[in-house]
Structures are given as C-alpha cells and as structure tokens.
Image 1 (spheres, rainbow, N blue to C red):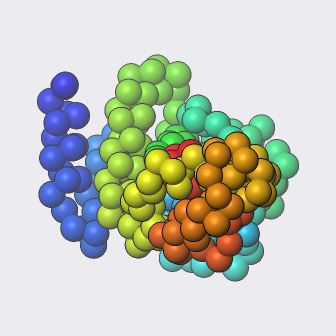
Image 2: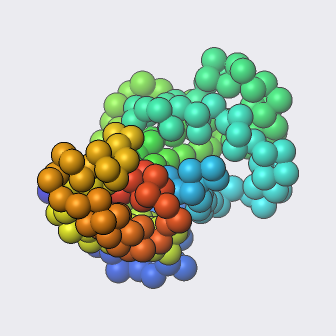
Image 3: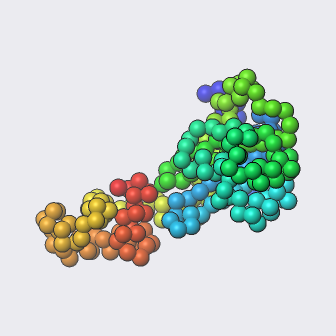
Length: 235
C-alpha cells in the first residue's frame, strides 16, 4: 500500500463523526478541489430510502438544492444509482437539467466529477468533488484517478461504519439457517403450506420460523422480512 493511502486510512479511522467531513474536505483540497460532498443512501425504507449528505458547498446552494428538490433531477445522482463509473461534469451530462446546471455554475460549481460507490446491504454512496475554475484535463484526471477512487472508497467505508447502524439498526441481525431457507421460499412467493411440503416439516413450524425472522428484522410481515433479508445479503 502506498504512503498516501496509508495516511488517508489513518486519518479517517481516527476521527469522530463530527470531524470526519472536515478531514475529507482537507483531502479533497489536497487533490485540487475546493468543494466536497459525500452522500450515502440506505436501501430502506423502500418507499423513501434514507439519505445522509455531508457537504462544504455554500449554505445558499445547499438551500437552493433542497428547496427545489434537485436531488430528484440531478443527473449525477441518477448516474450513481445505476453505475459505479466515474462521471466528469459537462454540458452534455446536464443537458436534461439546464436550469439546475445554470444555478450550479452560478454557485461556482463549474468543474467537477462524481465517483459512485457500493457497499454491503445495498448501501450506495457517492463522492462529488468540484471547483470553480481550471478545466479538468485528461492528464490531470489520469494522474489523480486512483486517488479519487480510493478517497471515495474510504469515505464510503468510514461513513458507513459510523452511520449505517443508526440508519439500519437491523442490518447486523443474525438469522438461523432454517429461517434463511424458509425466507428464500417466501421470496419465491411460496405460502407456508408449500414450504412445509418442500422441507418436510409442519406448517406450524414454518410459521414459527417466519415469525422469529419477522421479529428479528423488525418488520411487520413475511414479505417485508424476505425483502429486508435479501437486501442485507442474508439470502
């Protein structure tokens, strides 16, 4: 492992939640970017996944972004939800959201890139770095790509460790082998009677294990238990 990688790991591993983003912003500045944002999205609840955003963008821009619900139309966010590739800002990237792009540039966010990340339990993250001037050349991008990717990964790992237990308190639940096998059949749409026949156990035993899994996962029914267990990588 290279020296700068070790330095960054040491820096993020020994800071508390309050100073974590200050450390990240300093690392971004060392790479050549004035602005830094890291967002992390938990997969639950399905209807409105929880999102945590840390940013040193101006308060005015953050207020504008929130008030106009730009999260729902931001092309970089849409990209991050379906790809792990780095995305460099350009007029083409924002062509479907011209008003958003115009306001971002007015807020001195003209040059930038987004690096999505993926973690366990379906958690998605994205590091966004920006500056007001100096075009991002291919040479600079090639020189810094490894550092940019590495920074995104350690930001995701460190922030996940700090906040995912709060956003998804049941993410570390342990299910028994029998509970897992039964929830797999539930996920396939099988009813208790069918599962009992397949596993050669009583329907009462099937329901007993389903109820235990529902209680452990903190959900209201078997379908939700199967979905959550799948998201947590238990199935």
